[in-house]
Image 1: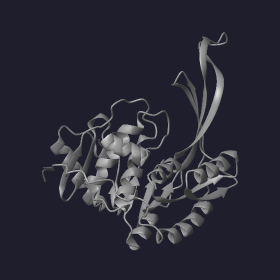
Image 2: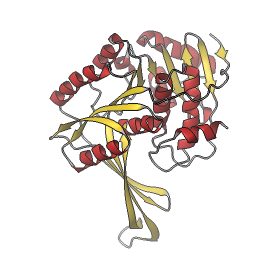
Image 3: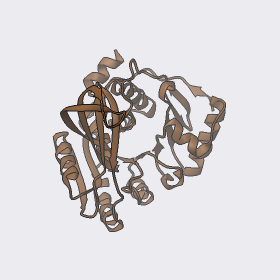
Length: 319
């Protein structure tokens, strides 16, 4: 199987009819911005004088927000706590035109990542998280089955926080309904994603599963073996400064990196899979969808924190 050339770029499709269902672990990204002018007399740490705060959807919620920013009709299914962070996520998603189906677990603390930023540099991150209860997840699975039929494509965003404990059943339900399933994986056991249409690991995640490779030929063989083992139609590998590669029975398509300036990579993977999903749901083939996802990655890493990319920014990046 040889490497294929990237096809001539197709124009951006009409994304308004694309219906994408995002399922996975959501979190709230909270930013405290301030100025750093001195070191604390209590310990050798900077003192940050707070000036403003900002909340953004994170995890699968950021994936959904990115898909909606590209004009798609987006639904999100997840689990949150009965708390302030969960309420904040609900509000932010509504403002982002995402139809959110957030199950409330009173015993759960909504995952919150608090970042302290001084002079545009992240100084500290504090995480609050715990896994949801099994009965909450079981109820979510019933709602998931009802939602699948109303969407063109299912996107499973795994952050290993417990929302996708039933991922194998979710994949089976979607495939039985004739819907393609994209999975942004996590962890050291990819067998739980068997039967998905496309897997989108990053370089480190794939190495954790198939081991290191010494050449592109060795990598292609390892990916082909993994695709066969998991019955995947394709695998899209995100490779940081090396761009992206799409592996399928048709061969390998490679996209070089498009980033002009890297400011912050947090959330870039969310933007990539969201863009890829929206383009596929809008009728583009996989190679063309990867091209636009790669352009989106080049734009979003030039922004601070979890952010989105608009269609206008994609057009400008392709010029």
